[in-house]
Image (cartoon, rainbow, N blue to C red; front, side):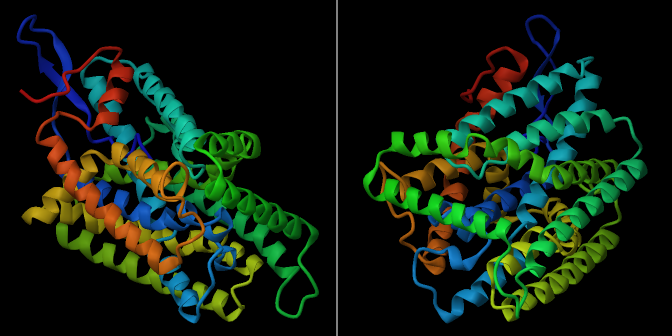
Length: 426
């Protein structure tokens, strides 16, 4: 969640007062992108909070919670499934694609080569690997870096072609995953005898991993936490890239197309964009709610929730993701008030906020912090989300009043251009 997170924070040519040479350093920003990032980076905390605070099995299946479940937990799962799950990741990925185009367009106007973007994505890969092994294995940065490099090959396509290729690729991926996990569900559908051997093995592995993480959180050290990530999940970061490839790359292409169509800069007629945005959010949400209610009626089985989460929900959430992008882009062009400005600030620092959130959640749930892993129920986890969002809104505006970039945005920029940019405002 990074290149897309900072994609609008792109240097434009500026005259060096000493030499008259063009240099990266002056900024022209699309506040609609910053506003959308700000909403998304807070939403991603709500999407990831279960994975932070409970065994990873609970990320998709309520039965994976280590705390006792209540009757209302099924309905809270449904609310999150409809409103949050997959939507924020999809929104980030669209922004990532838009950011690739924005960066390259401006780089070309400076006379810069495409290798600058490759270098930028390579730096993102390093951030992602560090994030995965040192903070949290729910990282998506490595997948963004890998898919982003491939997406660069499509930059010369027209918007219509980008949209067509993206939609075809996305639909193909959704069909593949629906068929794969649908077959697993059908082997243990209501009235069936048992889980398939493959699903049973997967469930056993996830339970064992959750138990090991619980033990580390209660009695272990941070070094044991990292050691477990390296030994138990070293190969999973590559598997994660493979698993999201058929979603991530197509969504990037769709985001590139939407940027070319002018969705983020006000080129589309406002009333039209709002109308289609609301249609996408409403129809997609209703379809997702119907799918979620089916899972609840199915008894929220492991196979049923896994099938819905990783299969057909890809179809139902795409209209929501694109609709949200359209609505937030319009809202970002007409921001008023303190909350709106703070949301824009959070979006300008979304890279730092994303990694910073993982660092904060590590302190809350793992050693050497509060060690609350596996101890908070879903409602209590949402309270943590509220505090986390409040912190992002508070510190982002404070920081940017004193510094030119977020801390990680600054490091990444220096890596990309091979030079040190001034951080503190004068």
